Length: 192
Length: 241
Picture 1 (cartoon, rainbow over the protein chains, first blue to last red):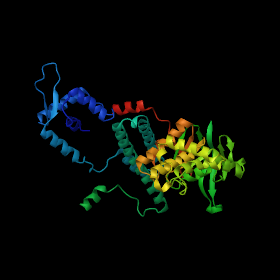
Picture 2 (tube, helix red, strand yellow):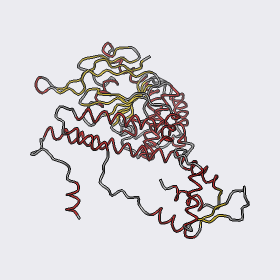
Picture 3 (cartoon, rainbow over the protein chains, first blue to last red):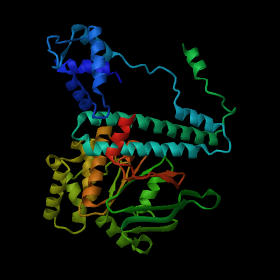
C-alpha cells in the first residue's frame, strides 16, 4: 500500500491539513487501513523534500501547515496510477507449497488437505460478505475493498478446485510418469 | 424448528455392478430463517439433493421431512399441494413463462392454488414493488434483463407465505453484481420473512452469503463451515494486520 501516492491523490483534490489527510485516507479505504499521524507527517516531509508537495510556510508556531500538490506531484501521481504493480514473480505461496508437499505423501488424502483450506477460505469469505451485507450498501469504498478481498480469496478456492479436478482426472487417466518438481523456471526460460 | 430435514438419504441409479450413488447417507437440517449453501464440483450430487428435498424425485433410502412431515407417506396429490403452497423453486435459467408478464408469472402460483386473479395480482404487484420491480410488472420476460428475470423468479418462488426456497445455481447466468443482488434478495427473504433457503452453487462468492456452507464430494457431505464472527471482529482482525 503506497501511503505516499494515496496522500498525493487526496491532495490532488485541493490543499489539506495533515490531520485531515489522515482522516480522509481512512474514510476512503473503508476504515480497513488505519494510519497514524506520525506516518502522515513523515510521508509529507519526504514528499516536500522530493518537491511533490509544498506546505504553507507562513503558518505560525502551534498552527498546522496546509499542504498542496505541486506540478511534479501531479505528474508522479499520474505515472503511479498508470503503472501496473509488479505481479511477474513466480508464486511462492505457502498454500501452493503445502499442496505440493502433500502430493508427495502417499499416506495422505490430498483432497482432505484441500478441503481444510477450502473451508477456511469460504469462512473468511463469509466474514467479508457479512461486512458488505451490513455496510456495503452505504459505503462505496468499503464495498470495493471487500469485493477485492472476496475476489482474491475466490481465486484461491478456484485453484483448490482445479487441483481437485486434476487429481480426479489423474485417477481416471494415470500419468505415464510421476511428475517431479514443477519446472516453471525452466519453462519460462524456454518461452523467452 | 427444522423446515427441511434429510435423514440418511441415498439416491442410487442403475442396478448391480452398474449402480451409481448420486448421493449417499446425506443428512441435513435447515431451520426457519436460515440460508444454507451446498457447494461442490459438478457431479458431486448437489442437484440430486435439491430435487429430492423438493419432492421432485424419491430417495432410494432415507427420509425427507418438510416441516416435520415425512414425504414418503404423502400421496402424489399431497406432494403437489406441498410444492404449490410450501416450496418455491429457483433455477439457473429462470423458468419464467414467456407468454406471461412479470406480474402474471409471480401471481401464477396463487391462482393455481385457487386464489381469485384480482387478489393474486394485487399481492404480486406488492411483492414486485418490494423487490424494486414495480415498474417492470407489465413487461414480458424477454423485455427484462437477466438479473430482473431472476428477481421475478425469486418473487414467484416466495410469494404466498412459502416456507422453503430451493435454488439451483440461481445466479449462474448472471454477472457478479446481479448475482449479488439475487443472493441479497434470498437472504432478505430468510431474515425478514423467516423463509428457509437451500442454495446449490459451485461459486464460493455466492455461497459466502449463506449462514452455513455444506460441502458435498462424490455424493457425501464431507464438511461444513462454522458460524462466522461478527463484522466488528473482522474489522478488528483486519486492522491488526
